[in-house]
Length: 314
Ligand SMILES: *[C@@H]1O[C@H](CO)[C@@H](O)[C@H](O)[C@H]1NC(C)=O
Ligand SMILES: *[C@@H]1O[C@H](CO)[C@@H](O)[C@H](O)[C@H]1NC(C)=O
Ligand SMILES: *[C@@H]1O[C@H](CO)[C@@H](O)[C@H](O)[C@H]1NC(C)=O
Ligand SMILES: *[C@@H]1O[C@H](CO)[C@@H](O)[C@H](O)[C@H]1NC(C)=O
Image (cartoon, rainbow, N blue to C red):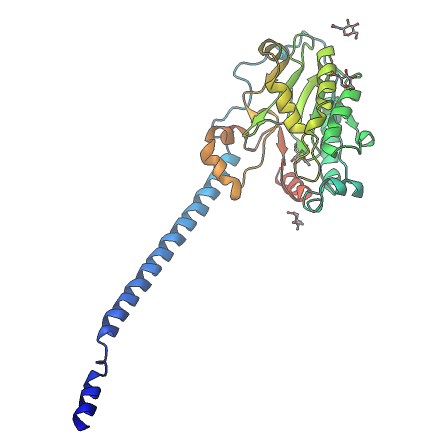
């Protein structure tokens, strides 16, 4: 009995010697975590630093040597041609009815307040330059998302002017544009961003080609899209331009070599900043810099907030 008890006692596990190694391992793991944490914090800090640096560099792109004008001064700038009749056409649908087009997104993407923020700026610019200013808000066609109504607005104004300059409610005018010989000009002047041509800001000339083109654009009903942040008008324009015969494209459409000529986007650190790595050249060409003609708040929420901010800056 006694012996058995002893044996049993001896069989009891020895106090483990592991704890020393265990705590050592734990300390090492802790250190590894700490190192990883410090490393990640550093990376995060570095990215923030780089993004902020990039944002201030891009904002000064023009003074750092970027040139937004075409390489050679356009011949149409010469004063031997009669002055073209130019109109700035824009509309802004602030009505509650437009909510049905953007379920959920309406409040974020709202145009409420945009009109108040930018109308004065656009109108006084047009007056200063002797351009017409057409507010086509009454032409909104409610069978499609409001972005499509630009086609109707431009089509109806084109009868009265040589050139119509379309710009979305979410852009502001700043600088100067030239005038000249209307007849030898292209019919459609657009800019490209990362996604291709942008339908938010463009020039179109009074011509049969333009009238037909606008009609074709309006006819691209298969692109009409409801209930999303995209309404399809831009995709339809891209599609039309992509499918023009080469010869027609060369004769009638001018894609500005520099987006910043008249359609700059604000650049700020965001989740989309990785675009900078994918296409540094396009970012450089399209970022709004002090001195640019137009800033376009494409695809941004709180448009009136942005507009007020930029108007205060200039
Ligand atoms: C434009 O079309 C009209 C008829 O629709 C025609 O009378 C006119 O000659 C055309 N203009 C040009 C420049 O082709
Ligand atoms: C646009 O559609 C209308 C109606 O379907 C048609 O009459 C017209 O010819 C079309 N225009 C063009 C330029 O395709
Ligand atoms: C309307 O166009 C603007 C710019 O062109 C764009 O930011 C916006 O997302 C468009 N809205 C829809 C619903 O497509
Ligand atoms: C929009 O921007 C303005 C100005 O930057 C700001 O005061 C306002 O709070 C913003 N509104 C929303 C809904 O984010």
